[in-house]
Length: 72
Image 1 (cartoon, rainbow, N blue to C red):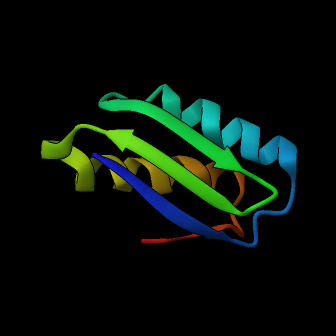
Image 2: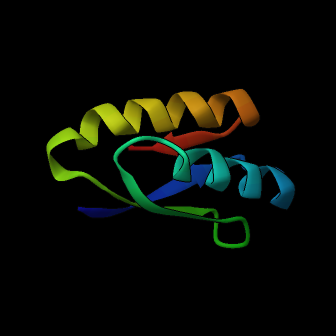
Image 3: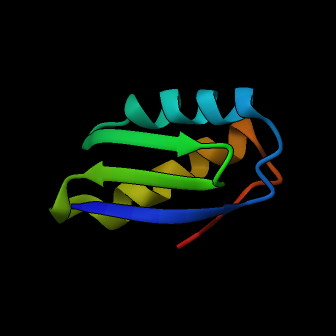
């Protein structure tokens, strides 16, 4: 399942790249793209575990960019 999310207060392109790398390493994630310019994130992950995977995504992103909010 592929879904798009809006990011709020993503402050730097380097953080976006770190978030993308961290998300791509999560189990169940097929691919992830974080675009700093558009403040959007695209996640392609396992359908059956998508909600659990998104909780892991939010946690990983919060560690890298604590002020960034992902609109779920």
